[in-house]
Length: 207
Image (cartoon, rainbow, N blue to C red; front, side, top):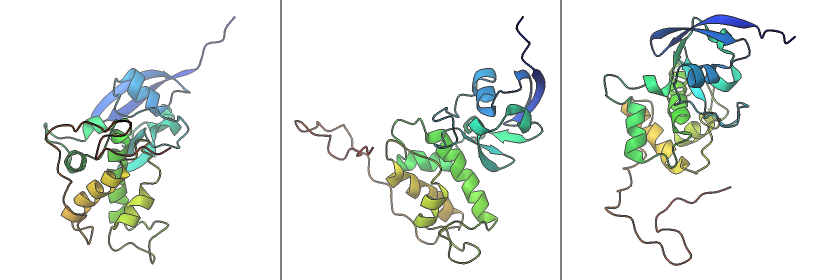
């Protein structure tokens, strides 16, 4: 006779809304969000906490939802990419990613945005990084952003636009020193690629 899998009634607070779910104790927060609540913005990439595609905010701190059991996330305010906008207005970080075209396939983008929002909060609280000179950071420069966002991978290689997008938000809130420069202009129409080559101006995809 097959033994019953132990379950628990789990209370989750997600994007300001309470939810009660009957879950297998082994259910991760990521699976609870995606499979039980239909919030598919957080993505399942590596399922080992190495790619950052599943990043959400827990009481304002960024976490890998694939590494957290749902039962351990009770009575914590969880914010996903679906809860970032307000009354139809994109979060400033979402708008910066749009303005900078800081994505390609978009699979990692929800995790990148959630991580960037959490990272700026960490910076505001004076948390140093591996490249911070001194005990506390004084300004958020590109090197700081790269180090602090190193847990979020983009397999399309859109980092050249992700970093400026984050710096745009940092500069607008007086966190940064040097504006990253204007966004690159969008072409009016796609250019025909040369024979045997990539389209002019297309992003290089590195392995």
